[in-house]
Image 1 (cartoon, rainbow, N blue to C red):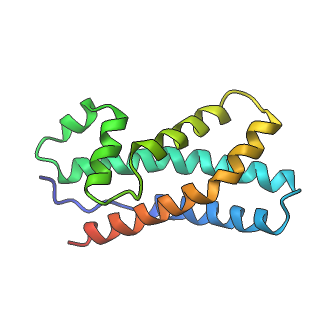
Image 2 (cartoon, one colour):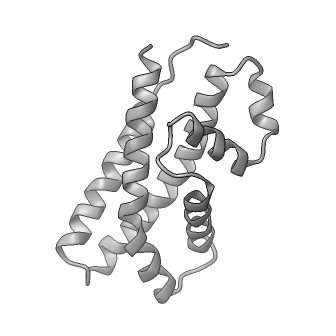
Length: 138
């Protein structure tokens, strides 16, 4: 087991900028510039959250290489079991699908659908950050 503390600075900063964009969007949902910013910030928050989950699991694992061999769905299930994420694979699969949809060109209807789901993901990663912080201090 690795006792090295995780640096959560980039993750925390990413979540903060994502929250700022969501807050601005809630003030004026007709602002497409802010909507697109929310989606962009979701993309990088999703990507970094995946990395943070893996880093955390590696930090507590007797065999960190085992984490690299796991499918992402199993990694999420393990993080859920440990209480690091709020929801298990059923929700994370939706986040993954949304992330995939954002990278396949622009579609107004898809963008509107995704942006309505972003506050749920934001709450998920806030939960995740707080739980990793708490466990990282032990």
